[in-house]
Length: 387
Image 1 (cartoon, one colour):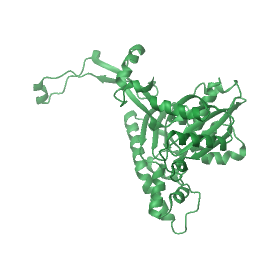
Image 2 (image 1 turned 45 degrees about the vertical axis):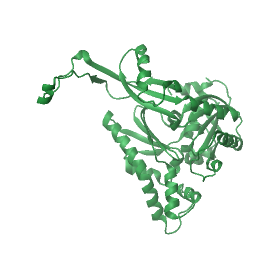
Image 3 (image 1 turned 180 degrees about the vertical axis):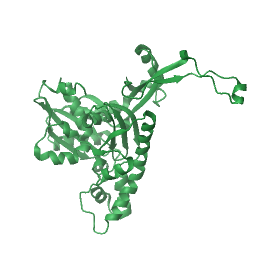
Image 4 (image 1 turned 90 degrees about the vertical axis):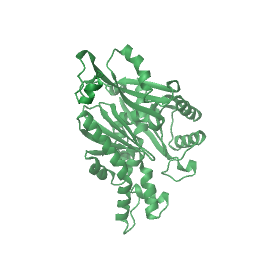
């Protein structure tokens, strides 16, 4: 991000498209550069449920041809005027992990990483595209060392004698490396989808990085980003734009919808609208609705809180702010509940805050913005490609 805004100045004025294919909806955002700033031209979202004969708000398991159909529909309905695009790939179709490795020369590290990566990637490395970066020490904790213990005689162990400390020559400094992998089949699948939809996509990017680019700044403080999807929630603790702790939670906004439908005896469609606060809660049911939502959210935020506490314990750092994005961010009264559970300052992510848009859209974009974090982030990177 350091050179991002510099690169926005100058270059062509060609429009670009950011695409985010989620589990329950496709989101698109079209931007162009004007006077050195990113200008919003159009955006749109289309629920995938109906394409799989399930209710809006649920995550259907669609074949590629149905995703292509939905993608073409949202492009048409949003009046998209360019085919120059980038694509955000779901976190679940990738792997992000932080590995602790010996501090060695870069040439040696390049030899070590493929072997270490096997501990984190459950398939042969030949089947994935692997990338990595060293996490700067200024971002994480202080220098770490790993002591190599000498084996002790059995008699000492039985006598309870403390093992001897390793001599200085055997104290190994370590570094942390961010490993990122994407399955080759996943890459081929998404490339085929966008090509058949008539798009020229120059890159695929894991949604985590798209969300970070659009919502967070490159400050020195630690921040948490929560992406509440339909079926799952992604949690990232980020410092200076770099992921320190990635975590996947198998709970999402779909859980709230289904709980409301079951407990209140209403349809899934009615529950989805009620969950988002788009209709008034029926008289006498306010308490019931509130309790159902809280019960459905409790497992999600309990696990998020464990991620937060683990980070604080390991790095002795506090989280300055938590931003929530994703379709589930539009849940009524979510911020109040989140703050009561994770004890940090919680805000809705505002990806459109890094774009120019007509004043009359300001309120609408603030309300719908969290859902478009991935698509905006991809479009911003595509603008950066223009130089």
